[in-house]
Length: 365
Image 1: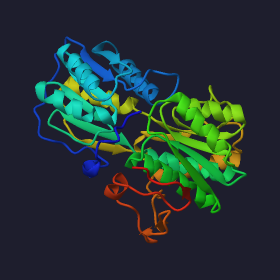
Image 2: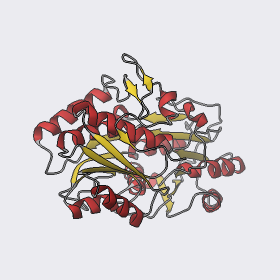
Image 3: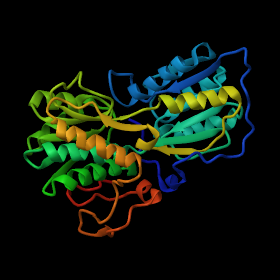
């Protein structure tokens, strides 16, 4: 989907809740010309999923800016050398701002950015910046915690499943937040994890889901790039948490809730800044409060009382009154990670390397 396992997140603590400006010389776009904005996608544009949400962000830019902008996208671009070639091509074609929403695009973006100092680059889910490279990401774990509450309320077996791509901090955050949310309302609940070592592989995603359903799992979540897990849940008559997009078209009966990320406002603001010459580099890590993460799109199996509970808690998360990673937190080896009365810092969250109590699985390296 959007991260390369070989990459390190040691420096990920550079992410801050607000933009941290770096020194750069803004270059305004000529008012008589539309700004050219390029987008590079790591998978095909499907009906729902990671890439779909970013393409919706691109469309939002077009709606907001009209004839002031011309957008281009290149889809299904593997991380690595292919990404570097595509990013460079877009820069050579005169795109003034280029969005690269995949963690494995970070290094290629930085490399190309050195060659094109007057082009603005947006490394989405990357953590390194440069005078003409900004970084951004979303606090997906906030939505995961809320989805866990829904799963905890609805499970009958007290066993949830989780189909995961790679054991990097962002994925661990999601698994842990989901488990903590689930156990906050159902202390008996456990979560079984299957690692795929892939981001977008629908057959493997489906196979993993089916295997989990054969192990008493009656509600499932996932951190992969397709709708395969949702389709499997629909086929087996199970419950599922959609990720990235609302997936009720694929799983109208199975979906209980969706955790979605919203890029339109951020992308539009960054293109406007490039257009006006006010663009600056920096790092953004936004969540529910910023409108970058939301839960909703409830399915028919979710009682109104549970919907109201989750929406109220979503407001509490946005207001800072509810912290998904509040102590006490114990890992699944029995070690106390965080005592009661404390919350994990951003740095601790961004460098997470363990699974919490209640998760039946290991961090495969």
